[in-house]
Each structure stands twice: as C-alpha cells, then as structure tokens.
Length: 124
Picture 1 (tube, rainbow, N blue to C red):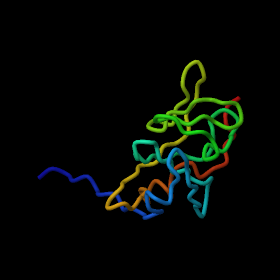
Picture 2 (spheres, helix red, strand yellow):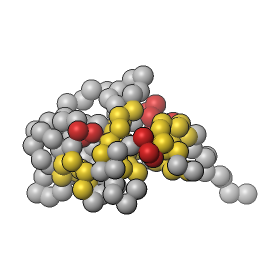
Picture 3 (cartoon, rainbow, N blue to C red):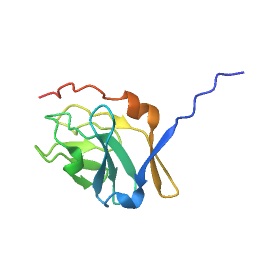
C-alpha cells in the first residue's frame, strides 16, 4: 500500500459571478492579511495574498489583464498564476489554491489558516 495524499478541505468564499470580470474580491481571514480572489477575462480564477511584494500595495485594487495584475502603487506586474513579479522586478506574494465547481469558488482551508499569517514587511 502506498501512502495517500490527503485531500484538501475547501472553504467556499464566493461565486464566480461575485468577482467582477477583470477584477478582484477580497476574502477576510481571522489572522493575516486578506486574500485577493481575481477573475480573468477568460473566467479563470486565481488567489493571491492581497499584498504586492514591492511595497505592500493592495493587489485587489490593481488592473487585471491576461493572467496578471498591475499593482496600483508602482505598476509592478504580478503573475496571477505564480504570485511573482515580472522581470526586471523581483519578488513574490503567496499564492493560494483555488477550486471552482458549479460556479462556486473555494480556497484551500489549510492554506488560509497557514500561509502568510505574519506581517513581515515586503522587500523594497
């Protein structure tokens, strides 16, 4: 018998329609910064910590284009699939696992309770 990988516990956070096309919705957590849930033009849904790796700008207020978001403070381009800044900029913000099922958006409950809980300052 091989060890099995535990199945993530998913937390429903909204519906796809609750997220504006080419926009974001913020998800509050009891501890840690909020999570930004983004919807691209092709209806792909992504989730990142709502904090730019540069100066901590609110990514949920940025402009979504393709599978990227432009930080509203200094226009850094952050990949929605990776959370990483596009070169020549450097740095990443934590990415959260997303599941969309029957129009409902779910985030991994364990990641919500574990990732990026401190207020460590961003680089820059």
